[in-house]
Amino acid sequence: MVELKVSLGERSYPILIGPSLLDDTTIWSQQCPARTVVIISNSVVSPLYAARLKTVFQKLGKRVIELTLPDGEETKRWEILNQVYDALLESRCDRKTTLIALGGGVIGDLTGFAAATYQRGVPFIQVPTTLLSQVDSSVGGKTGINHPLGKNMIGAFYQPRAVLMDIDTLKTLPERELSAGLAEVIKYGAIADAEFFSWLEANMAQLRECNPEVLTTAISRSCAIKADVVGQDERESGIRAILNFGHTFGHAIESGLGYGVWLHGEAIGAGMVMAAVLSAKLGLIDNALVERLRRLVAAAGLPIAAPNFPAQRWLDLMAIDKKTSDGEVRYILMDGLGRAKITPVPEAQLRATLAETATLDLAFVSLQAA
Image (tube, rainbow, N blue to C red):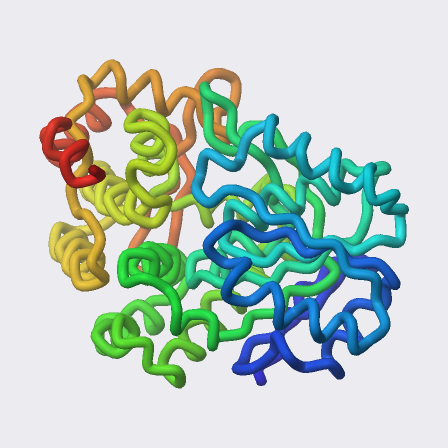
């Protein structure tokens, strides 16, 4: 087992990575002292793992409540969140109750926001079961739901008590979901670790084959980078914004197509290519590095081109972004391999980037999704 730490003073917490963690009563007794736990999962993950987790908690003498939500990005909305509150209130859960987020990023974000707001805050533990949630959303305390006008626009910074990553859960992950998670792994190399980027180029095939040793290395390095950044800037007032490399474009794709048409990681894959092209147009990197990133994104099984929304539609979608300051969108760009820069961008270069990279026919995109 690999153990990392997110250092945030009294809000510090461990990240545990390894096989068979779901069934480890010793770990659960240490990390979850609550007498009542609420396992929140979805209709895909719950049948696979909820019963195992419930058995562990019952062995430890805990009262266990289960709540199974619909699968998919559409779950991250107010109506579903209210169902969680209803269940907590009906079960008379108090402030010592611990919520367990068992699933991917959608479940983690929604459960975390419920924990942040129920009775003004109760403990929660992240148990991410997808690669995407293991390397990104489960670490750092970003919680929230979507709004029809923008992704993740309603939420709170609220840190978990612990993050337990059982890599055995990746064995049941569909190939498309695995590729989506690799987008965030690539991101860390592109903006924070040139050596890791080169390692990914050499090991991408083994990652896609779910080699346990290679996966553990990739997850551990990704989480270490994120933990370090979050420890420096918990509330994204500075350096933490670099973790949104590719996300301004990617979130626009998700909003423009409709949440769930493309997986989050698929949108980020195309978004990173767009951000790299824009970086080159501004003279921050050369075209050779753009091609290296494009090849790596493609090798991960991710899109390297974006939907061809009209240019003004792109601009409107990207204007609704959490990194907007005083009406000006700040873009996260590559400033060499393993380095990032946060900067506004002249509209001319932005439009040129869109013309070059947003080339997928919308009818084709919709057909693929169907």
